[in-house]
Amino acid sequence: GSVAASDAFFPFRDGLDVLARAGALAIIQPGGSLRDGEVIAAADEQGVAMVLTGIRHFRH
Image (cartoon, rainbow, N blue to C red; front, side, top):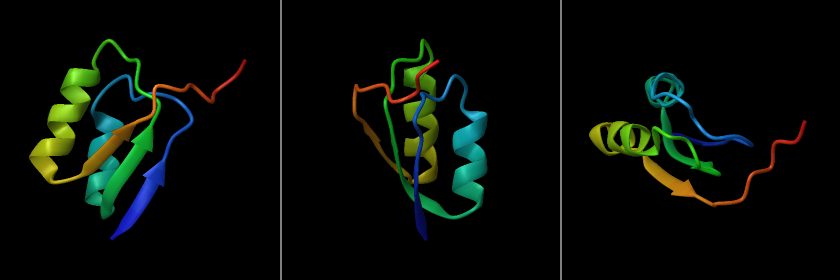
């Protein structure tokens, strides 16, 4: 088991699926995607804890 952190939101569930298959048990990310609901549902389906901080760390 591992944990993962992202500096940007997950726009689709595929990134979460890859992390779950690799053994991630928890993910922290800022949230804010139009598809947050789908990504959260994918985490729930796979038993992955997800924390949404509401703070974006990615800068251009």
